[in-house]
Image 1 (tube, rainbow, N blue to C red):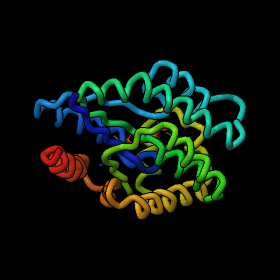
Image 2: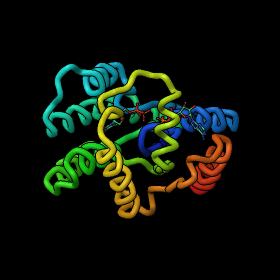
Image 3: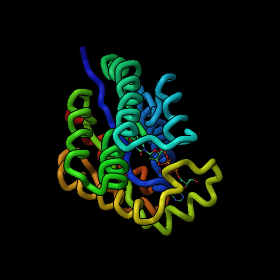
Amino acid sequence: MMSGQFITLEGGEGVGKSTQLRLLRDALQSQGYRVLATREPGGSPGAEDLRQLLLFGQNPLSLRAEILTHFAARFDHVDQVIRPALADGQIVLCDRFTDSTMAYQGYGRAEGDPAILALIGELQKQLGLMPDMTFLLEAPREVTRQRLAVRGVPTDRYEQADEGFHARIAAGFKQIARQNPERLHCIATANHSQEAVNSLIMKEILSRLSNV
Ligand SMILES: Nc1ncnc2c1ncn2[C@@H]1O[C@H](COP(=O)(O)OP(=O)(O)O)[C@@H](O)[C@H]1O
Ligand SMILES: Cc1cn([C@H]2C[C@H](O)[C@@H](COP(=O)(O)OP(=O)(O)O)O2)c(=O)[nH]c1=O
């Protein structure tokens, strides 16, 4: 059976992941590809319930409980939605995946604690599915803060975190990119127009699709 391609978008809040996901879905569909666009935390009914808890729950979870809950949502999403779509030969585009847990929980909340990075690595190993390609969108924090101010969706737990947390996340993503140069493609110009960012990413995706 032909298997599809699993492509993820990563980066801090407001870099344009959801916008690019929509543009990529439309561009790939118009070229005849079958595409599933999804997101984390969430993407399956059960995982969307867990998203509510993670982003808007009244009571903060301990760090390890938070990591396990992100992975509980991810296992459900992978088992019920992502794997079946890949087995069916579809291109799966996902807004965030395990790199976000590494960046937010591993580098942001745990400040790179090796035991916590190892826990996330072990859970990812058990999950047994890595993206084929990941695009890391990067833009200056000033730009993304400005965008979030006008986006007008409710502010979640992570967006309310202090600037030190967001700086550790940005550095964490850079570290992940250095460690995974084959899989991660850095888009350092995510502050450029939506169309410019989209055509950069499309070029990379089409070049990979022509090689598989
Ligand atoms: N390249 C861009 N230039 C200007 N504004 C953008 C660009 N990409 C996205 N936006 C706007 O910035 C806000 C955040 O974008 P969004 O795609 O929701 O980011 P994310 O999913 O990474 O949080 C939205 O209001 C969106 O319309
Ligand atoms: C997938 C994932 C997301 N998150 C956080 C990052 C975001 O602040 C939040 C919600 O993600 P998302 O809906 O992508 O927010 P945004 O559009 O603002 O980027 O969840 C984690 O902390 N760990 C994870 O494993």
